[in-house]
Length: 84
Image (cartoon, rainbow, N blue to C red; front, side, top):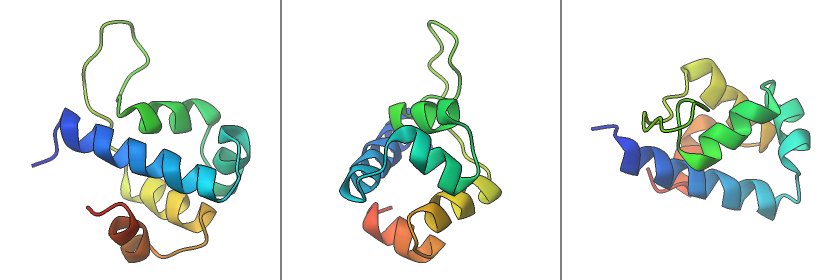
């Protein structure tokens, strides 16, 4: 089940992968075709930037494909690297 804990684990792993590629959030966002704000929210595991919001990040398939492409890997490789 996808919950806040899963979203935070996904986000922490995504941050680690991004940093291992030496990308800033802005560089990674450009490569993934998303906004820097989306990268920030995904890495934090949050679905909303609203104060006090505790909804988990829930990226669309298109976003997940963009993330994988931005890291030059397949979606399967991304999930494997994130141990998801």
